[in-house]
Image (cartoon, rainbow, N blue to C red; front, side):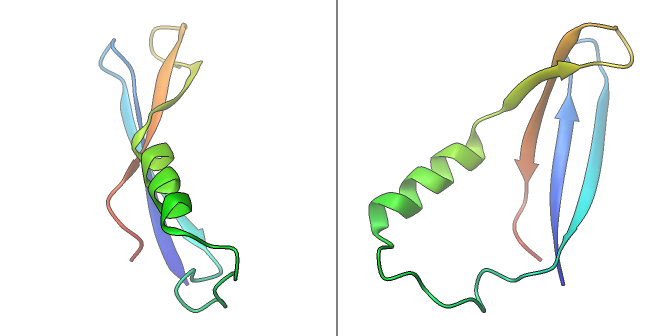
Amino acid sequence: MTELTIRGMCACGFAKEWELAVLSDPFLEEMDAQFSLGMLKEAIRRKAEPHGPFYCPKCQLMSVYFYFVGHWN
């Protein structure tokens, strides 16, 4: 089992991290024949972008953004 860390951050100072357990390891799965370097670059770009906004429990606004942190462990 692998873990993925996600960080939620808001401009008001709210910050929290979650570690999610992932059942499948992408490196052990069979490679898709349609996979290309362009698809990998697109996946890396999407991972680097913040996702949101979501509701902030501290300031009560829709201002929390989620970021992927680190690597697959």
